[in-house]
Image (cartoon, rainbow, N blue to C red; front, top):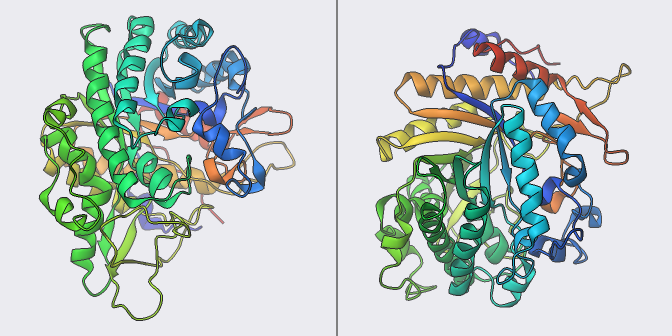
Length: 479
């Protein structure tokens, strides 16, 4: 990837005081210790062991062994000077069956982890659910079953009671779109089910779980705690005939299916119309929307790339979204005629286009849709095929340039009035990248998956300079 000189017009931009710089991980992707200290199996343990579901048959049994090496990882965060660490709590460590008895060893691990952050001056940002549903709950119906939302509220209360005096920012769910539509619609994520109706039911019960969890937390954590949810927004742009209508349909099923009930207390009417052939949404019961629309303090934003869409003309084979393999089913129920067009480079190792302008566009759009709503970037980063140099260093020029250009886009959004509170880079560590196993590296710290040795990449050193000065440094020229 090369970068034109015009891209460097933003060098020297200064981020405001109090802006929270950090990095993010997720429990199943880094912890390992999958069967230690009372942890029960999750849907990802089961999915990873299903032949053909994960590249190379990789599992999260060991991952980065963060469970045993968390002190070392917290030292890395401290030494980089990061303000915050966004981590997730593994539900199967707290309640191995998803309900009932509490596993004290699991709670004790997260107490040690959070205490370690506080001792090092790191602000903890806790995510209650980053996709590792206890397998017994899936066996009982999973997210398409209403009871799972109730069990999640119970789990939130348990964690809040244990850690509510230590954690100031609580995120209920990470990317519920992936949980619902990749897990139950296309089947490319755990639990691997393929059903349009079940994916819509799952989306609603995830919404309900979010609201009920906030209610549960409010009763047990510190009065000044902040509440959040993290959504991965689709940034779709018209790319051909019927492009505007195609964008509307994707916006409904990828974005407004969550922001509608969470932030406005109602599902969008056009979503109901789009999905009328699939369901009448009778699973939305009286009182659900009021329960979902619990006020939040921060809307978490995950952003990686954009899409170009048009309406399929019915001739030839319809092109699906290459970012979300459609070989099994669709993650876009109700958008049957939407066709995804190939995008030009440059691209990351995931095949995702690099579009910092789409990042700025998204932040401004959210600011217009939800005026007064504070935002935080909870994930942004890139996978590249890192090479260890002869001197042992990782000169990840492409990742550094990616981050610099996206931070510049975020700064432009701030200058235009967006209330952006912080930025959590994905990811702190190379880790288990879901169905891609260990083949994709997002980390600003390299993990040798044979020895588990950690090596700070050049992108981390660049980021450390930004955090220290709040001034956007230049990135080294690529190529």
